[in-house]
Length: 239
Image 1: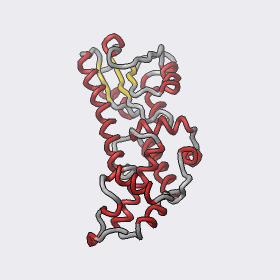
Image 2 (image 1 turned 90 degrees about the vertical axis):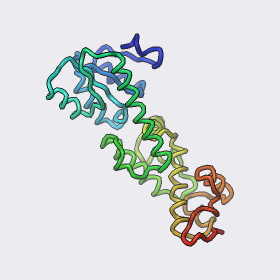
Image 3 (image 1 turned 180 degrees about the horizontal axis):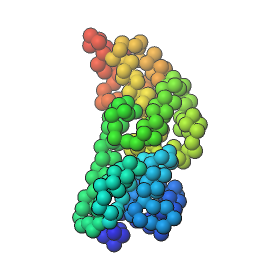
Image 4 (image 1 turned 120 degrees about the vertical axis):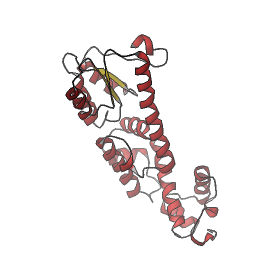
């Protein structure tokens, strides 16, 4: 597997399941390919641990096995495996499965870049990741009008380290937390404008921008129009 994939991927190998768990925490890989039959910790146990730990639950997992039993396949998916490949397999099949999972993650990133942290329930992510993103959204919206709210305060609200927040948010949304905070605020601003809430200054202050000109610049970059030209009921301009 390494020989076939190392030209396109940076490969990190582990000698057993326990080593795989430790390396996952250290490296935070984009995807994990694991055999089921391993010493110290088998693939089922490793997958279950990865998918139930907030630090690693976002990492896609492919399980490889020589077991043909449908019960084994069910067990693999029960532990949260994203895909399951029977041995022997064609390397082209593995490459196709890898690309498919990576494309799914890209589509997830595109969704969150377009909609922000809304419609989380409809996305194909683990329950651990769903709760994590919901908590991120609640933390941002709860401090929406505070100009000083940033990554440090978000990490404190989430009760996680700044480095874990950076890795986790970027892996799930494709954006750094600082950009996600800004995008969430601007999406809220757009909703306020649509609902006829106040003038530009009032909208800007409501979502934590103290400078109307900077707010307008950020809004224009995200939506392609000035906030004063954004759609609102009756099509009246926003002063």
